[in-house]
Image 1 (spheres, helix red, strand yellow):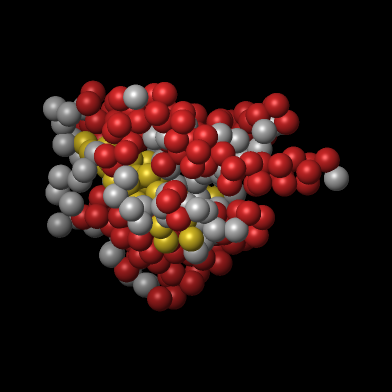
Image 2 (image 1 turned 90 degrees about the vertical axis):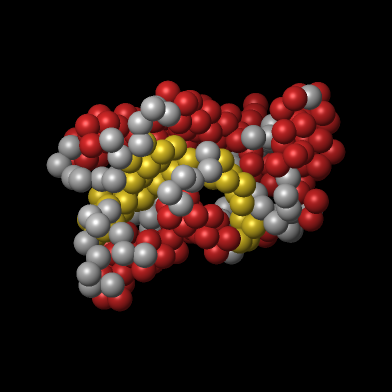
Length: 276
């Protein structure tokens, strides 16, 4: 069986940094993308020492910048990629009116535009060989309206819709398209920074761990017929998500009751920091 190569974005820190080791353990060759070249190089060297059989290519790229992304897309023409994991992303919980326009544009580019353009670059080759897998790291915020994170919620919802739409469009092929939706991630996720401001998220919002997210990604990688959507959360909330999509007014009410108070603490703290 041919050894497969994975393109992983956001590979230098957080979930991505830990995911690199798991992917190497599973025997995949790796093309690692992150903005911080020094951190990326250190991570790659550590993996090469432990897994010398794994071929690793590092590509320093700021996916929030069009010029940098264009350079990456050109480089991808020279590489053989079988799977892409769109892991890079950033949240920004703050009041919408205080959001900096430049930050909004960069965050949307990183969370949504970059995955779309990278997938477009890869898919032509995949259609020729009739094989390929896209794993998009969305969020529960992509399935549920998220106060104080409207543009983050919009970008993750867009990433989910993009991935699922491709799954329908190319259902006649062997290409596979999966979106993964973690809740608040304890361990290496962005939620760790939130805890310092607002404490742990209320238990009824659910949550997950870095290792559970990685296990979910592994399920998508190793299944012959992966699910279209995986929810990585400590509670089984798929029925609730289904109901809120059928009854949008209920989704808005739950967002107000379950999330608004907690996320407002993070948002107003962020706003205060920008004023200083």
